Length: 488
Image 1 (cartoon, rainbow, N blue to C red):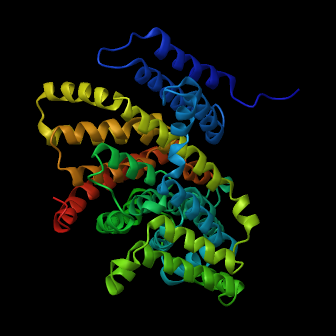
Image 2: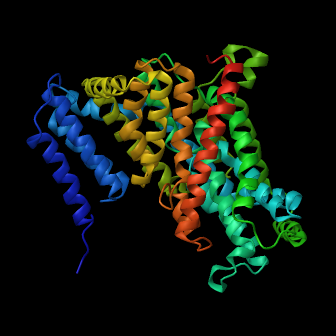
Image 3: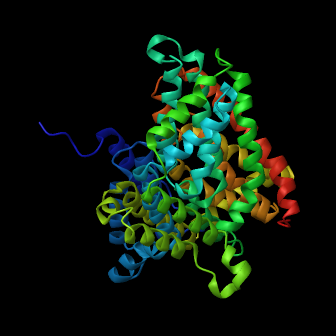
């Protein structure tokens, strides 16, 4: 007996929600029928993603088909399909897909593991030092690893587990408290912080950039360098504070770990000298950082400036030409192609919600409600940020959450008088900070939670505390830093 290719209940709920909005709810005054139909399709798609009715790529294909067939995006069939596919010309979508392909080189060559063990060999004489070693390892590879799951779950997590096992800290032996629980927490909570620090550190960040551009009428278009510079200081403060706070929250039984540094050195010895492919991967890594930070333009002028996505294509080309990655490697990088597909669909739908006037209408209603509260732009901004952050308890996908709420919240905050640049930056950071909360918050969380080192209560407690800590750091340190950078 063959199983259905979709989850029946999740699919049924998504279809029911779509039809209910479109056919049962009355069309609000000020909206066109096309806007209302676009909302119905959009909400149904988000419900299907949240309920995991099908893989997100498959849901996106179906959503594109429905949008194009409905005619909501154009007056003619040709125009409708052209608009439905228009987002695939967006360079940001290709940036994240190509960067995911490039990050495959970190795993294939072993460079990612080498970097991790190198930091442990330096900091690993104490348990707290191992925590910092894991955090710095995450940070060092984050700029070219858009899959935060691959980074935290695929590269850093095996290193963390090997260290925990070397100290006989295993969930099945009820010895998680020795060192494994603490290291698993650091392994995980490094992930949201590093994800907030670079556009290329997690897949939804380019979506956030696009939504910020739309909400500000293209007045604010965050480049890779602008984002990285703005998030640098609050990110560094957060990455320095996090291992110590978790150390106080869940103190490990083992405090001194001289064997960990030796273990890391032994692992490095097993890896041997830096291989040709690792060296090329490291070189490409550094070249990309220089290009994305626009360093050549500082010395040679604007004539050598490259688009961020162009730089990513150059990096991938270098890896292909040198054989570090083969075309088969690229084709097998399903996460990249999947991301390319669903990103295009979600950005298209978000754009059409804006084009049809629905975002403006919805934002105006929220703005009027907040205005009646009489809390001013500062209170309104705080309410919007906190609501955006903690509604992630109801989402199992950061992408779905950002797509569903970011555009409207940005529009409302800006219309109520929030300083544009600080507000969009704190919202951008919050879209990663919210990953701390639950064991289903992002793709990395079930990988690390599934290793069994923490109970559900311990995970949620640490997640809430770290969400508060990270938000305070970005508001206070980030706010002062952005003032210094001249963003307001």
